[in-house]
Image (cartoon, rainbow, N blue to C red; front, top):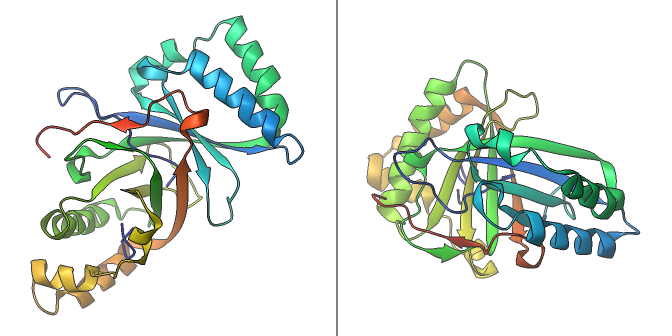
Length: 253
């Protein structure tokens, strides 16, 4: 979100038809063996381009460029749906052998998997664009404060939709309960690092949209509904992905 409640694993990519359920993204964070990075990347690229280049099993790969996860990779399958996962995950022996031999064998054993549902009502895919850089803003929502957080998100969405409608972003909720602070993520998509250096006008914009003096109350509401937040920068790796990285505008946005 560009900084406050304001600026993820995660990640829109191509939106699904409006009459379908919101798309799901399965994000797997992986760490290559430090002595096998070249082999890991080569195996990952070949695997994705052979088995995950289209349909519900399409995969995009991101490289984490900041924070405690720097140097790790996000293997993101989607857009897909829960109903499609049984078929998508019904891999044949050749697929499994290729993954185990050329990908998993070159990675460290620990990995983390999350399922993110795209909140289309609070996302902005108003034009076609190509994935490049992602600013991930992840929020830890307090227990039993989901309704309060939704109210906050409504207000934040109105600010950005009113003041910065050409910026493209996606909002996602974690489908699984967790104690890791990964409940909600806002993803901004940008082309050049200069975007990160732009002045943060959110406090000013908030009061222009919601009224003079309203920002102080907003901060109190955020404090009451959340435990904190964290940010990361991700870089789309087209060379390792099965997807093309093209994001198609969603009608009605």
